[in-house]
Amino acid sequence: MRFELEIAPLDLDLTLGCGQTFRWRRGPDGSWSGVLSGDNVRLFKRGAVLVADATPGGRYVESRVEEFLRAGDDIARIQKELGTDRMLAAGMARMKGLRIVKLDEWECLISFILATYANIPRISKMVESLASAYGRRISQGVYSFPDRGRLAKASERELARLGLGYRARYVHEACTTIDEEEFGHLRRMGYEDLRDGLIELPGVGDKVADCVCLFGFGRLEAFPIDVWIERALSRLYGRKGSYSKLRRFASDRFGRYAGYAQEYLYHNERMRAQGQACLFLEQ
DNA sequence: GCCCAGGAGTGTG
DNA sequence: CACACTCATGGG
Image 1 (cartoon, rainbow, N blue to C red):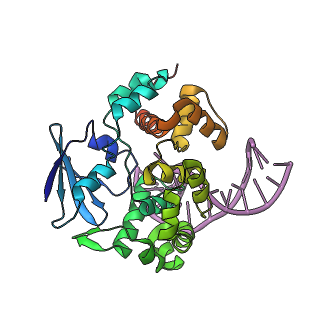
Image 2 (cartoon, rainbow, N blue to C red):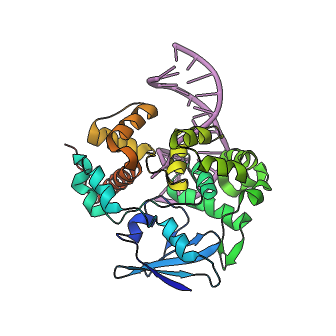
Image 3 (cartoon, chains in turn green, red, cyan):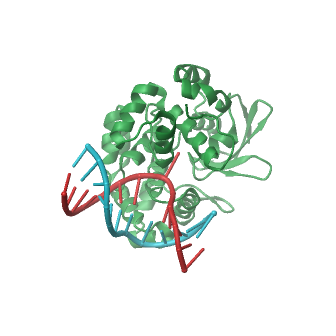
């Protein structure tokens, strides 16, 4: 099945290659492949048009892609609001195609629990291991991310053997603590309450909670602060301190679209570390 | 082989 | 509230 969508602006390399997702892979032809709620999907651009190839028989794939890439986000408006920040205004325009993604809440929660104290290649490997071990086979070598019920059947020891290390306990705990009813409850909460609720889970602290709020629950005001954002805030804004202090600064400065500001800063800082073009410069 | 990772939990000052 | 220490492994 093939669809054509108009989601603009959109840069697939920027959006899918900057650490928001752990299971999307770039093919040699530049197309990106991943799984959206049980269906294999391949995305590529043909001019300004986004083309999506999906598993035959997949239902509502078109709207799932739109949800995943947050087609409703008005990037021009978001950048206009963030543009009142002179630091962002300088380089943001060159990242118009970088969109926040909307992941499945459950997959997002587990993925970022795994992300603690691990590098991105390893995180990808752990998430992939869970999928191939407990997910449903979609096609050759491609598996869906296991739902809570399926993952709950795995013992902590089994999970540890998959290479999760001490994170195995947290994943196992999350499976037994959260259910669909709880997820429904969380979806209705405001950002602060949602955040507090997530932090109650073992293995979920400030940063993971904000990642799940932003990428899983679509709360654009969330501003996850990892080591890269810490460096960016220190280097560009001269701000240092505790998580709560930096979070308050970001909230005051970037407001309801702080999540987008975070992605711009994050991407910029990583590019800078790789010695590539740096768009935001210290004053 | 060595170093350290999109942090979190726990204990201490 | 701020810091220090540990955590289990495997990419780079």
